[in-house]
Length: 102
Image (cartoon, rainbow, N blue to C red):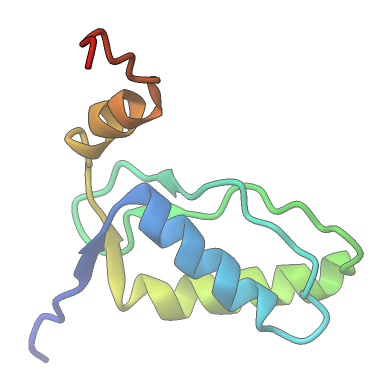
């Protein structure tokens, strides 16, 4: 069987995808995923969903959704390090002061 390749996603991108997929599952419309976490593995899925905020969702519905989404998206995506965007996003959040007198 040929090795499958997966698409690299940053933590923010993967968290957004995971949350959208979980919220699309029946009974999980109010669930929220704070973040996915990296796993220290050499092959296979290198991320996990450690915490889900239930909202009004039942834990049984969210548990089923997490297992399904983690399995399905784990076959499509892997977590990549993104050190370049973090400093840039901090710089973008810093207010800029114009000292030029026009």
